[in-house]
Length: 69
Image 1 (tube, rainbow, N blue to C red):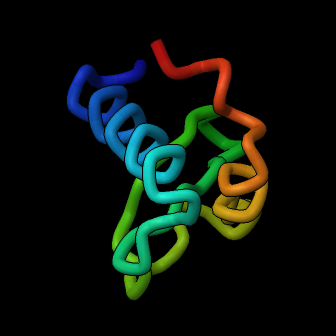
Image 2 (image 1 turned 60 degrees about the vertical axis):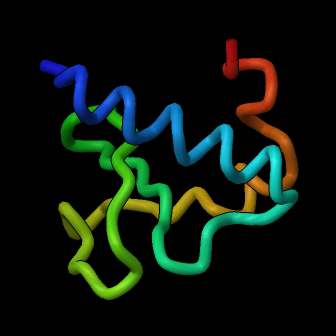
């Protein structure tokens, strides 16, 4: 289940990345295939699962640009 706090955190991360043209240096966007969710976490935090994938580069490339409302 997606928490509203997580959704807001991801939304702020995406907005910040689009506005600044690069991913925030203190955070990373991670896709966790075990939950099927995007999560924002501090750079120094361990990955949420062994199969998790950092999605910063595709975010900077504009993959999620149309998702921001």
